[in-house]
Length: 213
Ligand code: TMP
Image 1 (cartoon, rainbow, N blue to C red):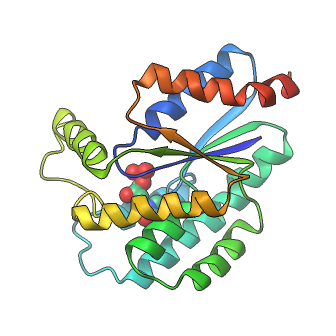
Image 2: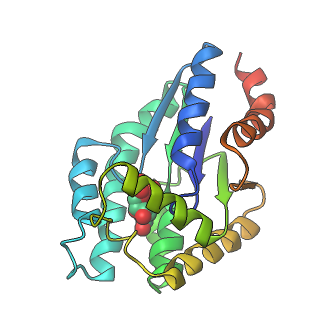
């Protein structure tokens, strides 16, 4: 079972990934939590390159290829082996993020991104993609609070520094691809309280959980 979590900055997906992991562990299921970018050793280096706010000169095409490179390594080293060993695999962002951030956000060619994604993923896609949707103002406000709490003020990454219009394009992009892929995507209300949202996620995964036990 391969599940990805998607959403704009501050949508709460990382918290939901952690809550789900705890829940799976409690049920005695084998699972692996991973993320993009940065799910491998090389990926962590690529992640630093991608997010460092000092890299103001990065071209949109360079950014696109770095995400694809991170993904190719991740598929070979983590995702394919985990799926072959019948584990639950939970991925904090996957190839849809490239369609949305680099395609809708940075205006890179969508047909080309689709080809690149197919190549990098080798045709491996999640069974379910959970889109945690909330208004951009709500997400950015949460992301901002997290930055203040973790004393990273003034050190927002290259994406957190983008303006409201960019994040709005990202949100709309996510809603568009969710509508285009109704068999895979589930849209969830990310303005809900953390525990309430977690309960919703557990309830919708219940049929799959029963299958695996
Ligand atoms: P994270 O903070 O959710 O781990 O993601 C890091 C940033 O990378 C986030 O701002 C979204 C961005 N991103 C892309 O632009 N394209 C991608 O393909 C992925 C996976 C993430």
